Image (spheres, rainbow, N blue to C red):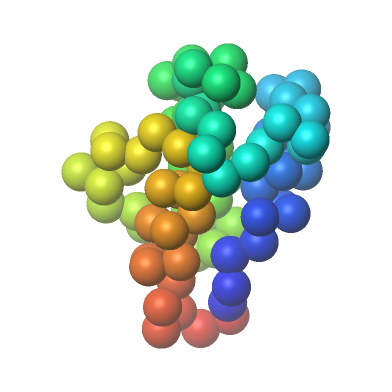
Length: 82
């Protein structure tokens, strides 16, 4: 299963009222998109549930940008069956 940036944009716009136009690879979740740490963890839980994976806590702690999250998702989805 491939990671979908479109699903990410829909979730962020629906749940956190972030305009999809603002969601770009270089954007930081807290500084640029205005998310707090609890909201970010909610996003991670949504992604884990949607894709049936568990992201490593030590890697999640390093994520600041949309690109970093996309890369982490793609790395963890390798070999995962749909």
